[in-house]
Length: 308
Image (cartoon, rainbow, N blue to C red):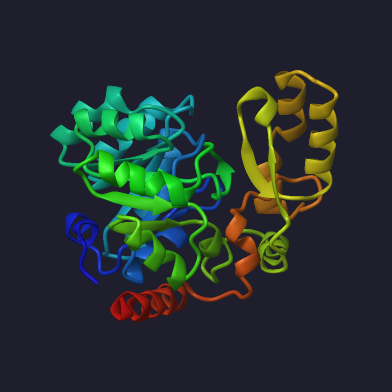
């Protein structure tokens, strides 16, 4: 299925894996890339040398293209930005900020730069600064979110920029992919479904929490302080909501969630850990390989798009 994105990135399918902190490591990135999509190693808050090691481990598992997601709020962002150049990475996505300070360095190195955006204004700005594409991420996605839905954001961004748009947020099957294309996207970014893939290293408790999730199990914490995060409801989110309603400070709320994503992913604490997942979690019912997921989704999407 050829699109501007598959041509730009040299991939078989217009499917990109989200750069999820603590989840998007070399096993998952390599598996998605080997299956024909674009796998991403999530830089998160990791030091540059840790990211370098992940890149080299991924290369041992696949010869297909993969990229790195650079979280711009990380204290190690400067180092990671240099590591991707030194390691010859060809695709970088960015989140949690504005990558303008790194753009010249990355473009000189021939890196395709794809920022994640939550507004038309930021999409236009990224295009002016030389971005090769943008990920328009709606608030249905897991983790840190904006306010616009995928349904409203993607077509507005697609109308506003000339560079290709990748849709993200609430996409977990072929119907979502087909819908994204109808809205003007050239590819999709998928996170939550890949969390439960067989190649994903997250704790089994985390996977089962997503698989067993219902449509009403998604919660957003942190809206009162302007830092909304989408995850699955549990004891931690209930305590957070109670403290938020009491008007507790951002620092007090941050202390409650400190280290809780790692605890959920690595230790399987799905009660007091942060189980980041998108609203699409209720649609995900089984564990599969990345190859099985991508081929199933693409077959469904092609059938729907062909009928249209």
